[in-house]
Image 1 (cartoon, rainbow, N blue to C red):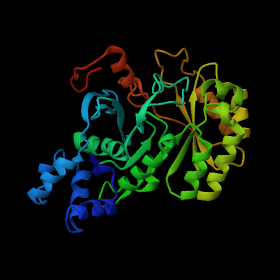
Image 2 (cartoon, rainbow, N blue to C red; image 1 turned 180 degrees about the vertical axis):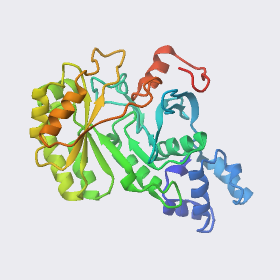
Image 3 (cartoon, rainbow, N blue to C red; image 1 turned 45 degrees about the horizontal axis):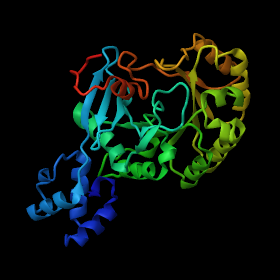
Length: 350
């Protein structure tokens, strides 16, 4: 079956031309798809014969809400979407004064094996298609009834491990006839796939690159993040420097604060030295506990921040949203797998 939602407008034109349709039909279909049409029958400005043909030849991805949790603390909404093949992914809607941000997944599961992350438990099942990533934006917006102004690709999966599909998603969600979300309002996270960082840099996109650093040296980072065993911190930082030199875009360095592992004054000093002369900022993240992991949240987040700032490094502490609703990446999906859940709880349940 043909996946129309993953197509660019010019590809839709070519496909519909083969069906004997005029060029303008492509944009009609494109708009319906990006508005969240759940059936071809909804596309009422298309001839009935065309709608019937599309039903025969095309798939229309419509994720179903497997579970939805709403934080009583800050209104954050976490969705567990059931996809067409029965797999599930997570999406989080976060409300800020400057607008709503949606955190999307790029894969079902993850192969990166980071010790502090629930997403990687069980490994990667498959990549998401561009349209499936887009669906998370479309149907979160549709279910909540609220506009989405920002996107962070920090959900389940390593975005740069699904490079081509992620790039196509970015093109689709940026399109003026679709969600029309500007690249400067999109952040893409990576655990440090150096070759893909260089490849992304050459494209010159004005998005924000967020690098999950989490340790200033190889001994600790390799223990936390297996990807580091292949490249090393210095090699990763060289790629980050090249990225800035090529794009002119500052990098955000994500740093999960883990008790007794990466939160000492000495490690803050090493991190400051590592980032010296490197435009960017450090985003300190209070660790969300994962039941299967022995790692615990740091009790020295503010001290660590102050130590970095004493070295002239810009460091912020990420506001914790949705801590009462399994908002950490992968937790809700993992719970469903472990418990074998099939029933959809009521909105706002825990």
